Length: 259
Image 1: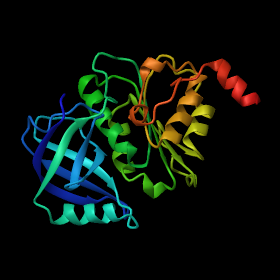
Image 2: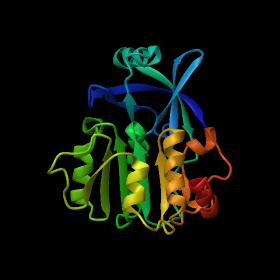
Image 3: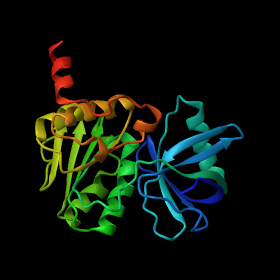
């Protein structure tokens, strides 16, 4: 899809945590069309456009959802928050991004997100469930502390409804006893370390990763030793912070580990 500039309305702004809020936007149905996993850019002023992952699949209703992290110490963040609360209309540019759900693939999905990177994975999960309800999905969501898993209750409800979905929460502070449920697990530490300790073979899976370049490539390096295929791993990071090779060979990983 070719990116287009349009005007939309702010329908709802909802605080999910003290640091994350959900925004619901509405515009012309055809203008709001996007593929699951894409992002939009929102105009703050004449010279400033800010990207946000779209947190909902395109459902032909002219609406889309955003999850926005509020950073009080950043001027753009405070400006954005004020604008969303008082604005009746916003100017957007969409869609952008090649990290989209492959409609031709039926391979199991391994989805890895940090923080509000969950927004991108939410859209992918919704579209995957719409296209193929029996498709196997494993969601790994990393955060500093449990409250940062701002949609935990929604994900738990997904797991109860869809037996093909598994949820792995990864928290630097760990989880209290009683967090786990059937097909829900909590892991203490970093997400790349948790992946290394829990997975063995990802050669048959489509992998989507959303987070900082450091987090994304740390996960890629871990999964490389488990048969990760470079043509079946997707992330927006690969476009704005590319590296070569994208997926290192097992030999190079061994050499790096012994140096």
